[in-house]
Length: 494
Ligand code: ADP
Ligand code: MG
Image (cartoon, rainbow, N blue to C red; front, side):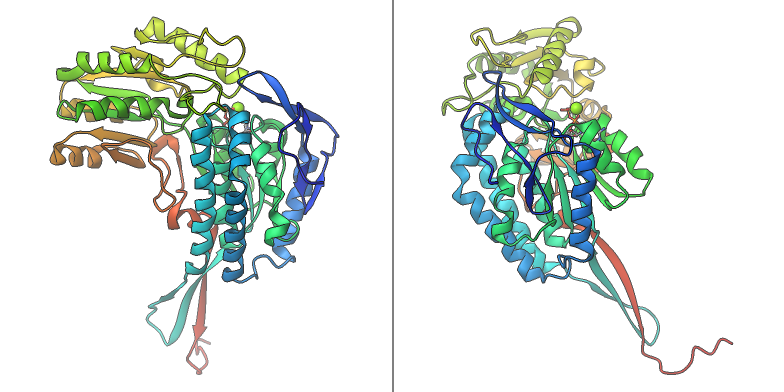
């Protein structure tokens, strides 16, 4: 059965296992919502350990005997190009479905879908550029290292960039020759299911990619525990990342984790003022602040602190909140009731911990939907919970600093290390900060641009492993040493 695109009130989806559309083993389903209306827009299978086992068994067979790892790199590349083409041809439908399901503004969803296609194309090209080595061993021998796929990859993704996160996981894994079991977030499974509509047509044979829907405990955890899964790739919260690493240790799975952050966005007094204000808002409010690399700690040099805060506040109050499918909308609702309540509780906490400059509550003009106001707290102590804990919503903590050393100290005083940005017109100062900051991504005079050609991932408790670029495919490759003796004499030891 081909899956339909969320047009009617509650479309009933199936999951894609071993090349077939099937119900969950238990026949149970759960609702998927439109967060701008709080209405149910689909029902999807509530998969459990039985479904996980079916999917992993299919992926394992596709890997062991189905011939996927033996396809040529050229063939895998062509398949990824064809998948990219399907995404481009259906971009409008995918963007609309994404926007409706996760609440992000349609214009942002369109950028995401374009990035999805680019990601499949990039790894389609990279498939044929994976190369081994000749090792210079000091003997009459030929020593080689071969790169081989890791096997079955279990891929667990979040709800903030649903299809893009699926592409970041599937594209490098398939290019490497792995087979996949993908579990989208329970809040946003629809676009990944749409993608599965095209797998067979583009040439992915049965079992190479399986997509199952379900909750973390009942579908994610069994995937992490399954003995036939060789690798887990996860993007999500630090708390779940820690659980996954522990559970994966039991079978010594390879693990890559892209977790949260509390990224500093640092503004020196000599920064271009207008660009800086814009960069501060964009850094923390894009995608409703539901971004792992959100610049949620805004560090501002004391010399410009007051003027900067006023400028930011004035502009933040004008951000256009609205239904995600309206093109003028710059901020939609949060993804779910749970996330709404979580962000609301941080807004209340912030009022006790710091001073409020903008927002601080529900966006009152909407009768339904999980809308919250873009919120700015200031004079925030870096030790406050709103400066230490990832909120994953449009809540900014503005923190003053005295000088360069002070800025670096505050920036690095966090358990996380995903991203950071520095704004200054002094190239020496900016580059000193780039070197001093302990984070996997540092932007200068910008925040958030992300390219498939450049590495993505964190230091410290923001996880480990790198996605995108050539680093991304490394996460799905093993290295095999091959020694070929060229000396025809016996070894001569005994
Ligand atoms: P959030 O806090 O926004 O719910 P999570 O880190 O909990 O973010 O979720 C990210 C992804 O991890 C989702 O696909 C979710 O279903 C999955 N997940 C949650 N808990 C577990 C778990 N214990 N084991 C495996 N996957 C999980
Ligand atoms: Mg969760």
